Length: 338
Image (cartoon, rainbow, N blue to C red):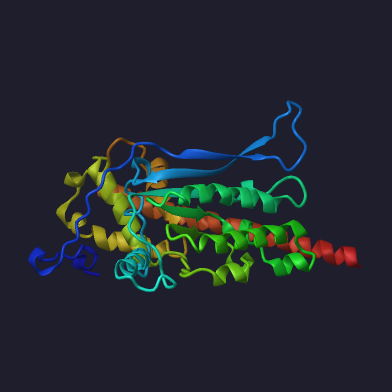
């Protein structure tokens, strides 16, 4: 591996077309949205249960500034998503048939993050109504035609548990009502030109196929590749150097030249770890093996390598414990059948 392989590529400004965007961020943080569960009896005080169902931000906002740039994926996922929205706006500007796309340019953007678990009522058969009330709030937001509304549903499998499993008796019938209510509300929103729905899930097999069919883009994001891990670890290294925690001047020139190669070796040994775990490695390395206000890059990389080994060992122990628990459960079932 040569050092140049890991360095950002330079471009000649006069040979490229620049696209410069100027914007001002809002300093207001997240605003909580509440819903009153009126589906069951009132509480002892005569009041309905108040449930926090969502957060919303006016974008761009200071709280989320820089988050997008610090996300590192393989296969240019961010570019694909940006091109999707850019194409939608282009089609509208060129008066392409609105049946294909009907978005336009807007004065400001709202981001609404829905708390999926809060949309289940503790009263039987009422969760579908909770979903409808949540979407009634969304409708109030999209009625402002100057606003572009992005609705984020995290852990969407909580709302879209497969109806096939529900109808077979493995899930309560209330789950069917929730899926039906969600699909109905999404279909209603199709007529609005200023709303974009985004969802995430870690249990894709649990999502109802009718919901998947309604998605324009379906992207699978697996564990990061070695190169992506390298970029994540390198961004952490650069941040520690910027803040003076890692002192490169205390590093021998030959050691400094080998930093990219060593970091790539560490990234390769971290293959199979999640992005969330990899982001924590610099902090864990410093807390576990350095514990001083300043260190050399060589000491930091040694600590980082050892932290990766620690994580691998911890994961192996957890896997062995889970396998042993499964084996005990299977043995217990076999004994009970006898």
